[in-house]
Image (cartoon, rainbow, N blue to C red; front, top):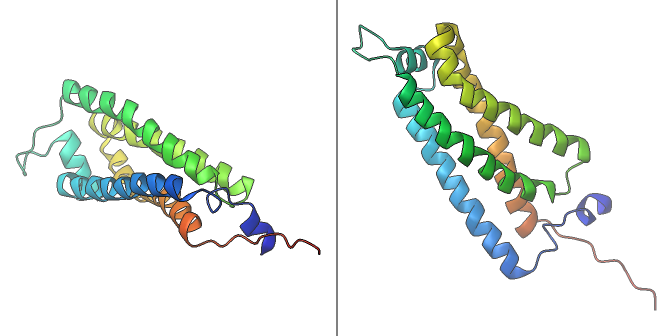
Length: 168
């Protein structure tokens, strides 16, 4: 246990650094919750609703998303999503998790962001079957985001580091 707790850079931060990082992460957690809520309202986070939202649905009187709307949304997300994950990811990298797990989580973040950016285009212009990406990728992206937020919060405030004993 000593090896694990002594590897956390987060647990060693001073109070003001912990506070600013905590405030940031709390806002990211709230932002993630609103993002999930917004996605649920628009696409239902299921295959059929996501397909109807992007590709259109005559029965539900939904028009397909036009390329200009997809371009505008993709443009914004291409900038903001990497910034959010770079910041939360850097905090996660300061955790005591093993190098292998850090590499896996950070690489997963990249893959899920890329799929999230591609998802509307694939559904709209590829095939309706890509609607399966809506619930699966949203869940995986949410889990990695949650890890990048909760792990640093836990280690900053609850992980106790062992101080080396000084011989007398």
